[in-house]
Image (cartoon, rainbow, N blue to C red; front, side, top):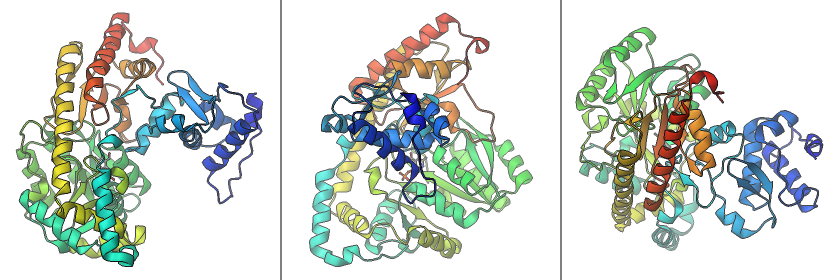
Length: 499
Ligand SMILES: Cc1ncc(COP(=O)(O)O)c(C=O)c1O
């Protein structure tokens, strides 16, 4: 049977993406009965080498087949042909692994040989994205309908690249209440924080330019800087921010164009800069004439009253480009966020935004504006804050009760991630495989390091955005049980294969 797969021919010069071509061929084989129910498809690695295509292409084709119910996955075992292809039940159960972080998603799929998928019952500490049941669909629908009645065709015209003015005004008022000075003319609406990182990089970075990032850091940012062929200089993220001597040394040595930072409840560590390091960073930026991208993706999720002040609120000399994401509170698929841009960069950044997508969807901007003005946003924000807060404390309690003594972590005080420090290099790999087989997923720490850094194998990231309170205790207990058994097995780095 595997020879059948070897005969699949894909046209690299076709308009149809390779993954869709592959998906169609396999779907056809299933529909024609060539592949029978419960037949195990080749692993991602095997099929990609057979067809000489990227593993990500195979992952995407399998994911498409799974979302349509043609195949299903058995964690730890493989991908199989469904008994009832196209069955909507299977379709509704199919979830995305980590759609918030494409690289994590593919990375996890790849390192697990394609065996790991979300299914009902998976306890997913790997995803930092809210689950769809928390999305305020009815209220947003009401806002969209009202906008359509009110604005008619204008809602569908091209919009200003900088963003719909009433929305900018409304967001500025919200920011001022939180101590960040803001004028609508300095704000730009973007299609998610990811786009913000991308367009800043487009405007600032050329091949060979240096950029300083924390290490570890957000995988989506690493991917953008790599795509600009910039040189990433990473500075280790400590529990209270980076070591300032190393930061200054790197500024002197590399003369970077930009520093990318997530100063509050950092992804993946959950660590935050102390107030001293915040002001020192701004001073260094002035001294070495460098600009700072402040990625604020969850600073408002402060569960222990840490009251961290955003860099932007302390930015007297306009060194900071502030990016705000709504994806962890609201509906990430809307693709909405904003940036606060120092005046001298308006032109460059507007041009980069314009060449990227002209503007963020006008309909979505108008609906979001109305949604905020009607008070829905405040209500939803409170709801999400309380959901996450409860999960945060449940998680901390479970960790404190179950974690083996050899595994440490620092309580972040907020955000969505907890960073565990394990003491054996071999652990994270075998732990990942064993816990995935037991239906518990986490993100291995090494995927958050840029290529220039020796891969770190001593950490794992646990997120609590996509797990229900009731799952947390069970998931942490299972994970810690596996840690205990690994410790008892006395695995040493030398006798375990590293994936
Ligand atoms: C630190 C960080 N920045 C940016 C993003 C992307 O956010 P958005 O959905 O607004 O593009 C993420 C998503 O996980 C993130 O973790």
